[in-house]
Image (cartoon, rainbow, N blue to C red; front, side, top):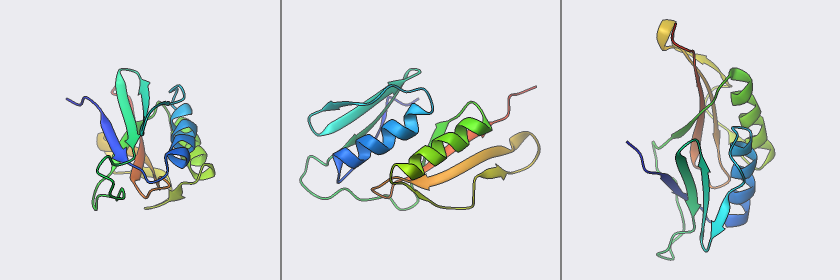
Length: 127
């Protein structure tokens, strides 16, 4: 369904450092800079950050969250920790299980240096 996700940044260097740290724990190679944008490609997906080309400051979408799939609880926690160490801020409840039964998911929320809300998601394998 998705081609890519791009979010705005007001500090390309801070975003580069943050997402290299966070996405590196998920197996992504360091992002590559293309003028005012940075791209990370991994497992057939593309994530990017961009300084807005209209010259206006980047801002956060109220109610917006984007999620990155993790392969384990440990990987979700490692990505959360790496993001915090690279300038992110925790938000929502602490990392942990949400929901019950087959729909339960392990979620770890944080915000990037620009305030974009991120969720690291681990879903239990189907039996």
